[in-house]
Length: 353
Image 1: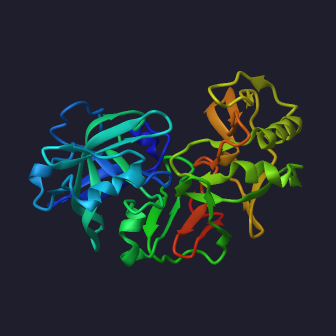
Image 2 (image 1 turned 30 degrees about the vertical axis):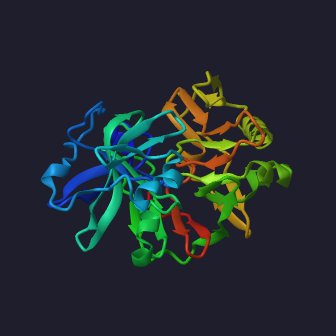
Image 3 (image 1 turned 180 degrees about the vertical axis):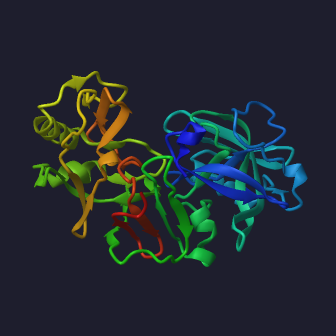
């Protein structure tokens, strides 16, 4: 479940594609819509992946989507790019925030989620030119809100309801489930919001953050100005500058007895715990509209690079109006339930280890 075994900071799920089905491990991403996998003959470039690449010619259920079809035009909202055309086959192109990208043929295929759950005529991308931070995964499973996402394509079957739990390390197993599940009674729901111009994303309204049981004095406008999305495909939570500063300052004050360590990449508040057998870390909770408090697991508070470089697992955006992101590190061990039909997202602690 953890993508670390495949060299990715995101989370993978194995699905079957084609007839007969071929198992593929895909990164699942609530922040994008198009599902794609690397396909033979890979006319331009394919990165190294763990499993054999999907070969559409060996599947009896693969169909190319025509350039002239309305289905081809659905790529515009789902990828942000106009589709191309090659030998009358629809061509998609998608680029992600980290400059990773995939380009290839748009097709339909049978997708197998479990032995009893098959999705027929599932629209996906057959990647012919793919580069980026995908580790050894075979591609990406798009769980956003646009019409071409897996969630929207299976509306009649699952009614836009899915849930997952991201494990705290690769030695534990999480899950991704579609449709009604026996989710715990302790799930607390917050309404979905729409972040302006970003209708494909799952928007949340942050109302506050607490450190060590004390709510930080952050004006409500700091979060309403930026808007917030929850994204399983972003590793580190990004906060507006006027929310990150008080979080960082309060955390540093509570941790002042520990020696600091150099910053790394976007993580600027780091510690050296090499001389400590135990460490006391203040609890951090996020509050969302509807009075929902989500306490973070310790692994959602500190990101461990090495024992001598353990960093506060948050980063500040450079601009106040840049969208805030509730990333996957902060979601560790939580049961997260997406109920798109009822417009809400729920959280419960202890969903997995």
